[in-house]
Image (cartoon, rainbow, N blue to C red; front, side):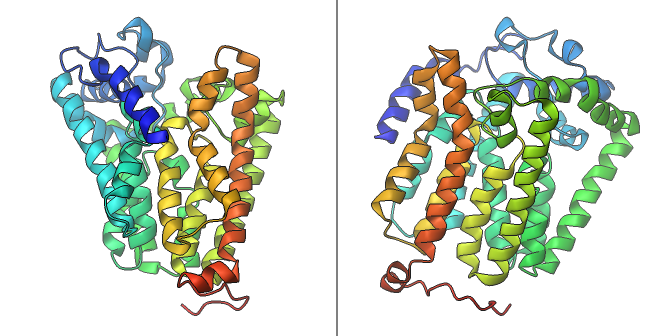
Length: 386
């Protein structure tokens, strides 16, 4: 059903999805314009200005006036390469990278279910949400899953992947915990070196004042504007508390508490569970703990379910219904968009839905009947030797 909905939605977006004529100044409702605009400012020697919301958005079309640049300065190393190209060509390359990342995501998981996982990923809500506004979340999802799955066998590629992933640092907060708990020391130190390298390179190219502007934006710039707002499309614990009336300090404390709990949970499952099971739980805990998680990141959730299929090929009916409803959450919220109160209320419940799903996944993995029936050993209370 979800694939049919997405297919219909794609037909409705064909005109804008394949708009290769407009410039960065003319394109409508597209996040990729922010990345190219940031690259253009960086190449013009105005890198620190990317964190000034008014200056940054002054050249955009009316539908893009709310765009902000929230990535750390070393992301400009990537976006400046796109800015060197004509916008239609840069846009086409960005779209191609995203599509390749979607297929690569399924390939790296290898669920061994024929073509079905590719159809599931391509026609998922996350794919539609990301491509409809040309976000880079499919690439981020691929790098995230690659880092979890290949950290043991390809530590240096994992380090490089995490260096690129660090341009969206909210998705990598639990990765160090995962690597240390798994004792993947080569991948951990490769990531430290690679991330340090791109940070130092950004300072050398764009100057320390750009990093100063980045940190100042948390107290009076783009980041503060984003943190103070409560957007229905952002489904994090902190934003949910804000939608329920909590002040800024309560929202930050709530998000920090969830992050701490998720970090402890990742440590526990990585030390005591088989690797594939630990990867699945770590990935969904990354979704739950991220201080910024939007519906265009929903492809990560699809990856969670593909990973889980390798651990438990058969799911209980309760888990199937819960997983299906969570995958459809963006469409359900769209139905509530006619009433802002109901839309915010539904959006506020989504992170707690994630928490419930975590519990269901845990119960399914620990079910000895399911595990024995489908080739996965029951989870032991004794530590797994690494």
